[in-house]
Amino acid sequence: MSEDLFKEIDEELRTEKLHYFMRRYAKLAIVVIIAVLAVFGLLQFNHWQKHKKIVNASNSYMQVMQKTIQLSPKSKDDKMVDQIIGEFNHISNHSPQSIRALAQLKQASLLLDQGKLKEASAIWEALRFDKTASPDFRNLANLLWIESHLDNVDPGELHNRIRELLDHKTPWYALARECEAILDLKTGKVIEAKQVFGRLSTDMNASPELRKRANVMLQVIAANKRV
Image 1 (spheres, rainbow, N blue to C red):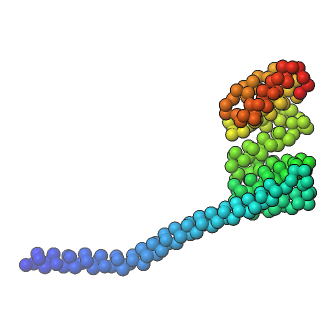
Image 2 (image 1 turned 60 degrees about the vertical axis):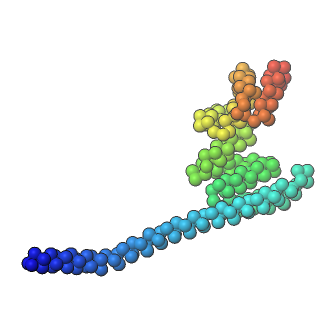
């Protein structure tokens, strides 16, 4: 009889303790659940915002690109080109990184077409050293800078930049090799240039256009024509 009574009292005490802990920590549990839901909701909202920005920036980029495509190469209006360059500049300043890099590259390309090498070079250099940009975009900016300065920059600096591209095995590896061969020719290293062009002419990882150019250069070198 007494044992049953003690068991009943013990069960009531355990039940009371359980109710106490439930009352004490119920509010905390609710706060934690609300906090978790709030964080999840915020992450989802930020993801949606980022996606929206990318979509909007992509649409803006394509609209300006359409204007660029419609320009006639023989009748380019400088004012129109300047306007388009300004629009690409606006996109590059107000877009996520991937779209920003594309806008910067196109902006530099149009500036180069206008003979504004200094302005184009400044954009390539800014992109090259932009740590937030994709390595492929940064290396492409470096390659475009090299291609545009083969005639007016110290060969030592050009060689260092080319080695930077070749050492990292970038997607622009074959194009960097072509720049290396051209630089070799300009500095009198005809044998080295011939070797590089020879490898490029049979490199199936290079584009057909690049392999064709390499073959032409091999013919020029073989005929001892002035390069």
